[in-house]
Length: 234
Image (cartoon, rainbow, N blue to C red):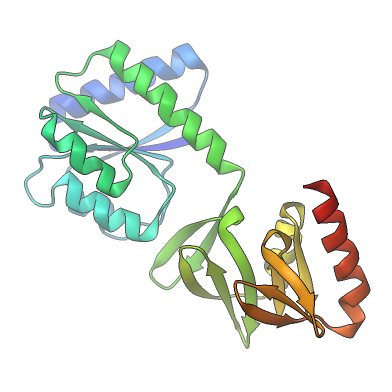
């Protein structure tokens, strides 16, 4: 099921896009859940990274599509955004929020279906490597491949990633099994590390992003075996 949002203040265009998505669904065999919003503020208010694709009109009365996309990108780096516009000049600005593409009004089904093909290609490529974490500000999607390590501190977990640091209330065991297929290994009771980013091992610690993370004596042999196997498989 593909969760798709249509953000369009004009009913006629929203109806047309819905019709096109339904037609595409019948032809392609993909299944969509469609949610309609009438302005940028409707989708950004309480946004929880729940969509795979967003079809976003740019010119709307209260909050324009570009501003809405900027707010969405603060929480969700992975949702595929496609702008709907009648002005090609807006397309250039779309790259600032990593928009995949833009659809020019009036919208033809052929052009729309081609662009939706491309959007689905990105969704399916990314879905297998994404986890969602519950933050106080809402749900955030993280690229698993971009996580350096996870640190347990009391009742909190700190995620250290290439996109910054994120803190949630959870236990390390909640993610240990989920991330094991992606070459994550528990170096001690406080760290779950991505073996991809281990730059070396010295003085009883592994080095990741310039940080020394302790390897417990009980886990040292298993950790070194896992690291050796990972490096041999690269």
